[in-house]
Amino acid sequence: SQTIHQWPATLVQPVGSPLSLECTVEGTSNPNLYWYRQAAGRGLQLLFYSVGIGQISSEVPQNLSASRPQDRQFILSSKKLLLSDSGFYLCAWNGETTDTQYFGPGTRLTVL
Amino acid sequence: TQLLEQSPQFLSIQEGENLTVYCNSSSVFSSLQWYRQEPGEGPVLLVTVVTGGEVKKLKRLTFQFGDARKDSSLHITAAQPGDTGLYLCAGAAFTGNQFYFGTGTSLTVIP
Image: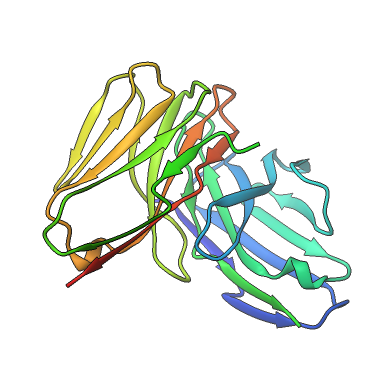
C-alpha cells in the first residue's frame, strides 16, 4: 500500500532563516506531487505541483520554491522566511491515472 | 478565484441531528472528492464521486454528485461527536493534475 510522509511535524523558525520541508511517498511510482498551505480551519491553497522529476509548476508568486530531486521526493524551500509564511503545509500525491489525492500528516510552521 | 463554494462555513449541532453540507461551482469537474480533517492532521479521504448523478453511501454519510458534475452534497444522518471536523470538497480538473478545494465546512457535534 502507498504511504506519504512529511517532516518535520512542527517547526518554529525566526524571520529571515531558511526553510526545508520534505515529503516522500512510498509504494508507488511516477506520482503527481503537490504542496499546499492551509490557513487555520480553512481550505487549501495550492503552492506547487510536479508531474515528474525536475518538473515544477508554481501556482502563486511567493517567497517559496519547490524541488523534486527524486521520483518520490518533494521538497519545499525558502531562503529567507517571512512572518506571512507561517501556516500548515500539506503534501499530497495522486497516481497518473487516478483523480484522487492523498495527503500527508502536514507540517505546522511558525515564523517568529 | 475560488471555484468551489461550500456552505455552511460553520455548523454546530446536537448529537443525533441530521445535516447537509453543500459544495457548489460553476465549473464542471472530472470527479469530486470529500475529505474530513481533524486539527493538526492532514485531510483524510472519505469518498470520490465520478459519475453525474452518482450517490454513494458510507455508513451514516451520503454523498451525491450533481447531474451536471458541478456540485455535490454530503448528508450525515444522526450525527455523532466523532463526526466533528473540517469537511473539504475538492474538484478534479480534466487535465488530471489540477485540484480545486472548497472553502471548508467546520462541523461541531455536541454530545
